Amino acid sequence: MTLSRDAALNVAQVLTEALPYIQRFAGKTVVVKYGGNAMTDPELENSFARDIVLLKTVGLNPIVVHGGGPQIGDLLTKIGKQSEFIDGMRVTDAETMDVVEMVLGGLVNKSIVNLINKNGGRAMGLTGKDGNLIRAKKMYLEKTQADGSVQQVDIGQVGEVAGIKTDVLEMFMASDFIPVIAPVGVGDAGESYNINADLVAGKVAEALKAEKLILLTNITGVLDKNKNILTGLSTQDVDNLIADGTIYGGMIPKISCALDAVKGGVISAHIIDGRVPHAALLEIFTDEGIGTLITNRKNVRKK
Image (cartoon, rainbow, N blue to C red; front, side, top):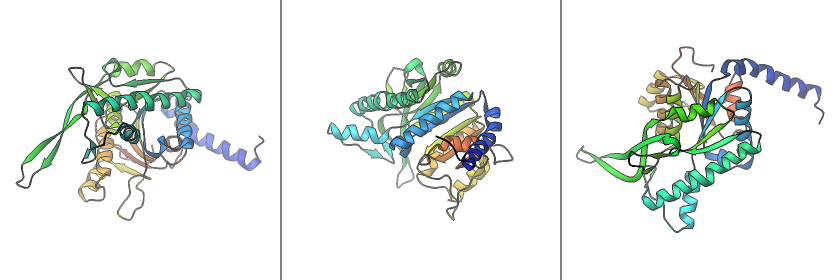
């Protein structure tokens, strides 16, 4: 296919704009949490896989952490087991945990690995049980009672990250392989835990002192009270926006994950719209980006 002069100039402009970022981030680690619509639309799935391959090809070290909640729900429905949620957390008994491991560590993980490989990359699928990558501990929900007391609610085999074995990931980063991680952790007694993928991505980025944590979501980014996107925020800005109610409800856990990662040593966290094709590339390699950047640096935007 022959490009018109204007189209060719546009391609050249894009490449020259990307060059300083490619040079700046060469050898750096980028942890990408993959979920939402980007996992269910074939076009978005393919553009995501190509983005990850391109990041590796130009010298970055991408690490993918994926979710899979809807796919877990679908399989539970097929086997006649009803999903139960408390405050947005899936109650995970032993039977449900078997399904979680089957879906996350098998169906979803291998589908993503296959997509990346089809697009010219070399991906390897892992769960947190491989090499004790994600050490986990049981998580309890805390609910405040009418009398002000706090009750711990047992939601089964749902865990939180107790530690990340970075040597497993460093082995991949020193090679041509791209790790794709399913958020299943392992406890001290070898028991499995279902862990929120955002939390796993944040802790992986924090443990590796990554350059970037990128959370693909179904929203355009963090919005102000007038529904305008906030493109660059400091950690103090985020704390203030949570305190004044601008950030509320279901966004708080995702924002808190990004905030904790930056406070823990990640250079910047990005909350971007995974419904936009090539969202990760647009955020990393263009001057404007497409989402919200959170960083501890004084000059917040850009990168």
